[in-house]
Image (cartoon, rainbow, N blue to C red; front, side):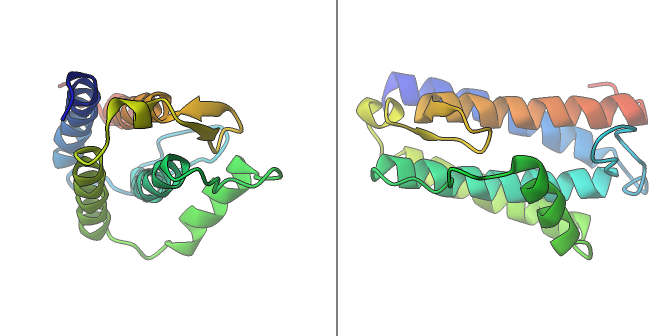
Length: 159
């Protein structure tokens, strides 16, 4: 693994470790509402969103690396996020955390096969911006950390 890829992996690992430590302290508060505007998700629903997004980001990056695009021109991120959470309404925190760990392991395994040139390949992200794989990796790390911070703030978790 190149130094550049290793640096991205460290960012991903640090953000995911932070998120895991926050989730370890949720206890029985999975149905606590995190946001009062927009999606109005509970901690569990936010975990569904994180799980779906993580898997989707992996598929997106792997496709971009192959010169393919997975995000259509008319993609609606808000609608996708809302529907993906609704579709997994019965998902459990334990199952979702297992899925998050699996997608992180898949990404780590895939990154180990990449070279620095792969990080520079660009494609459409769900935000509709054209991003390099390196930038998408930063988005993933930021996504984990930001939502982890949101959960920690609403539940009074100090890490």
